[in-house]
Image (tube, rainbow, N blue to C red; front, side):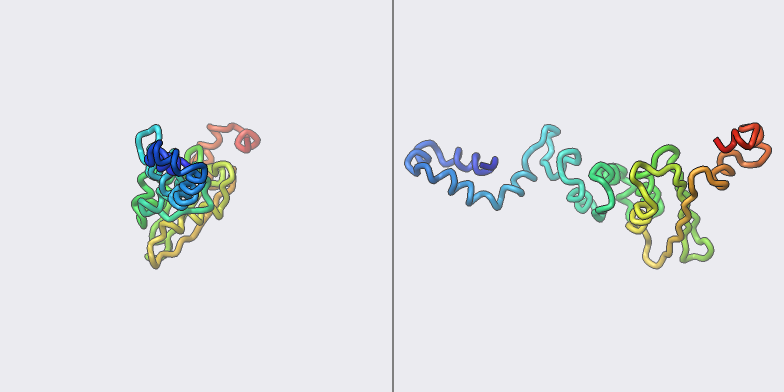
Length: 191
């Protein structure tokens, strides 16, 4: 018996239930079963929201669509919740939205670089460090997130810097002199 069928039975009153007999509960359950999913969405959660509007209790894909964010099946439920909570995802088609979407699956420094008009007005370069990937994140995950925010006519070119790349070392140390001060030896720099 669902919550809505229990409420309907209660609303019929004890006299009606008594006279209707033992077949009434199965009948009410069968008649209210199609409305049970909608009833579950409108039930109030402990946070005081209807379940459909409570991000922690409800289906994040439902809420994402409600605020204009396409559902992304490559993300876990928690990652979808993070995308919704980060209002940057609400700025569809902007670079702020692009950066915010990609950063939801990164850890550490969450480095994402966007180079506009590289090499022409219709190309955008996106650079991500693999060492910042969160658990289970792949280049395909990054591409899927970025494509959701790609303006019409723009082509994305992706660069994924592998962990401990020369590019990452240059970003951390800057110059060979700075690297020598930071590490001392080549072996220490590798670590």
